[in-house]
Image (cartoon, rainbow, N blue to C red):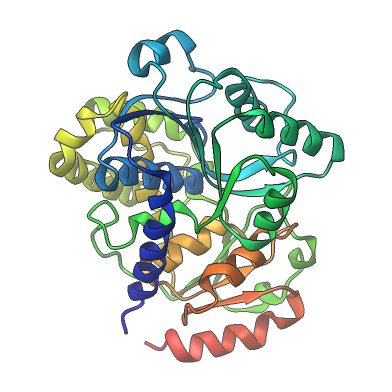
Length: 371
């Protein structure tokens, strides 16, 4: 059995669940991730290509938070359905207090303002630390006459069906799995090194039990977060999309080779899919997301095994068939997703406690990392 067959099975389940959306001729897609987190861009690409390729829906308007225009959306789509970007920010963990920077506040604003059309929230995890924030969100969500909320793992699903009682709450997997075995994910092979990547986020989702983990006693361990957090990716994209030239000097890992590889992937993608990309609203936005995805592919394919505490570090490993260990994050998201969808992936193990890392690692390496 090929490693990618598991991802294909999960993708088929995703399509069966998302079919409950129904058919729309056109729509708006909001909350574009104008940030350097590769996982959010994998989700965005899954949404864009699912809507256009499977639903045959025209995305007539797309925007992030800061560039959202009610007037432009009305001009482009009228009262067509609104799709809101999925991910792991339905809640208050990442609350910034500002409508134009806070994903949850923007989501609540859109839902409260547009009762005249269906709104579909693409697959999300739910986590609130404050009871008042949860109550406010529930009141806003439940007041909408036609709100569908897709939830991507069991723990969040139980929260959603309890509090968002007037919404259609449906469980499915992360929409990045739509990319499984697609031409969008195709890339050149990269020489695999003998190194181990500890792909570690150090923000509010870090599980501190792993801060002094036995990972560091293993040979050839490289600790890093997403490669796109190391440099000004937006500056790179601006130049890339204009003249396909730029190699920032502050990238730490093989900057020249990395940039050249990304440029080749982007050029190949543009040549192959130029008609589709140019037909989308704001095609540059989607090209940047494609570049983000290729950055993640380049980063991960170099290593023989990966430890990650990012959910989309896990998902990209499943999509690419890379042996890896998924670590628990600071709340239920990683464990619940693994138990809901990916526990059957043979080349992945989930670790909840740092004491279990070494035996699980040796087992995985023996079975999947022999040269």
